[in-house]
Length: 236
Image 1: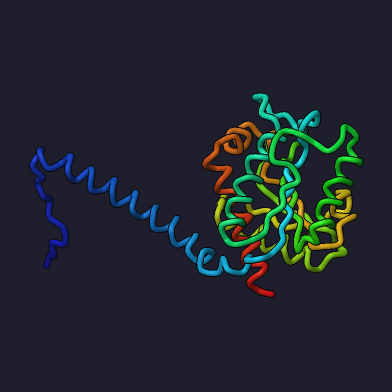
Image 2: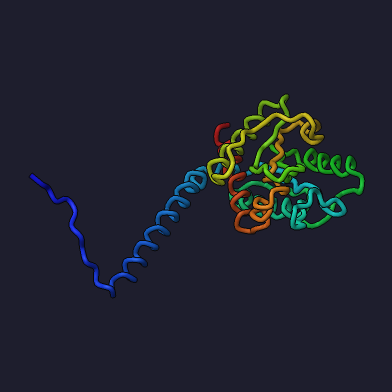
């Protein structure tokens, strides 16, 4: 005994474009809903950052370009772009945001003096947390992925770093890196409030350099950081 489960169906030629459009719209709808629901849970608890004093530090600036990508993209510009987007998200959530720089400048031509001025700014405003936006770069172009660092002596810094890193993994979907302790960063050693350094990606990787220079991707990175901050404060 034979059972016929499928039967060939002849589709009129004039209906093929309609079907193609329907399939494309269905795919677009799927990705839209995936994007929407991945963001909705953060929006629901955005109240957690209300009235929190948050310092957002765009690394480098002025005469200090930071790393330079294979195509000439400057790290300082990427840092500032992401920092500005992060500032927008945090402000919309009700946070009191202090930026260490809002344009292409630095506090001093001497590195330590520049960092000390950023630290003093955070202490002056009695910041609840400090977020430094940086780019990563090494000689090899094979490495990629955003990563968050904290000082091993700060338990709250670790919690903040883990929360931000988890959201970058979830939202960016292009890194599996984990938050790591770091003792080499001067800012991490000197600040007393929970402090993290967010390396938004490897500017030395040509593909990641291109993504980091894209305003849409910059916004996505900023939102991932914001989402991590919101979830950190929601657990207080």
